[in-house]
Structures are given as C-alpha cells and as structure tokens.
Image 1 (cartoon, rainbow, N blue to C red):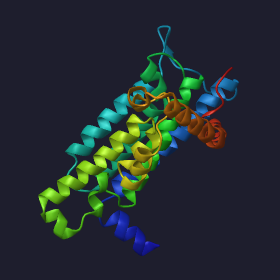
Image 2 (image 1 turned 135 degrees about the vertical axis):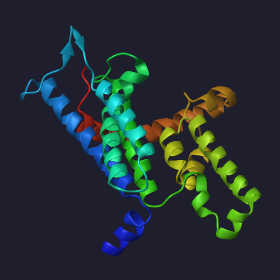
Image 3 (image 1 turned 120 degrees about the vertical axis):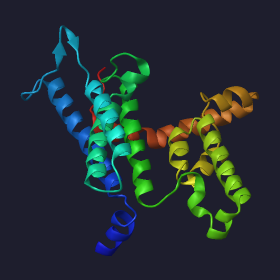
Length: 244
C-alpha cells in the first residue's frame, strides 16, 4: 500500500490534487448536512442574509475557488503552497457545485427535482477527478505508446477519434458516459454506439422514422425503470429528498 501511494500519488506530484478532491467531497457532504438540518429546523444553523438578501453558499464558493485557482497557478513546484491552494480550491468548488442547479436555472431550485442536477454534477466531478488520480489521461492519450507519441499524426488521430466518441455520447443524451468517457474512451464508445435518448439533440435530428423513435423510447424506458430508482435513492441519500 505504501509503495502504491508513493508511486501513484506522491512521486508524480498528485498530492495537491488528492487533497483538492478530499476537500471537495467533504465540503459537499458537510454543506448538505447543514442545509438538511436548516430545512428540518434542527441545530444552531440558519440561512445567512444581508439587507434582506439571502446569501447562497455559491457566493463564498466562487470567492474561494477563484482564490485557490490563482494561488495554485502562482505557487511554485509541488510544495505546501500548492497543496494549500488545492484545498482552498476544493472547498470553493464544493460550495459552488452544491448549487450547480441554482446557477444553471438562475433561481433557487435547491430542494426541487431540478436541484438533483447539483448532486449529479458533484458525483460526476468526483468520479472524473478520481479517475485522473488513478492515472488516466484525457481522450485516450495514456493508451498511446512511446513510439506513437513521437508520431504526431498517430497521437492527433487517437485524440480526435476519442473526442468524436465523447461528442456523440453527449449528443445522444448520455451525459454521464460522455463525461467519464473523456478520461476512459471505451466508456464514451459505449455511449456513442447505443441508441440515443428520445429527448436528445441526436434523436431530434436523426431519428426521423417513427420506428426508430419508438425503439429509442422503449430502450430509454427500460433503462430508467432499471436504474432510475437506484439513482434517485442514491441522490436522496446524498442530497436530501426534493419537496413535493
């Protein structure tokens, strides 16, 4: 275990990223705990207001993320300064992503169905960063050998093909597969070859026949019936149950 830790985390300089990820996840969990206590009217916590304006935690989150980001760029090497900047950025990012749905909709949807987007984005972000920590490089560059790296045409073609897989997965409404596929190309390939969701841009433009749309709708219904309940229970456990 110690050898793995040194080889994969300390030696390649990934410790700041690890601390950033831990800060991100712990901040999200702590924030959700506090907001759920406020919602239930328990504990000493209350919403923060100034001059009658409710101050959402995305505001300090943005300030911390900007501060940590600039500090990380300015910090030399891989020393304590960069690690501290990573923690600050992780805390800020956790606060911001916890209210991702609010930023997306430009209204307070925290405890609504739309607010589930925040939990989804936090899980996706943590998973993507975790894959990077384990050694993955975006768009399949890590799958290219040393000789191929020297051949620019081979490297560019590999990145371009994997990028097309990611774009196709996203266009088909497979957002989770597309995001993870940036780091694990085979995941994007799965999203690219499967039928699109009926509400996706791909289906709207290319599924002109009624038969194709019906097949896509049936596949989507089966998938949602199998995994939708599991996903909702996990999101409710992490972020709280939406109202109404």
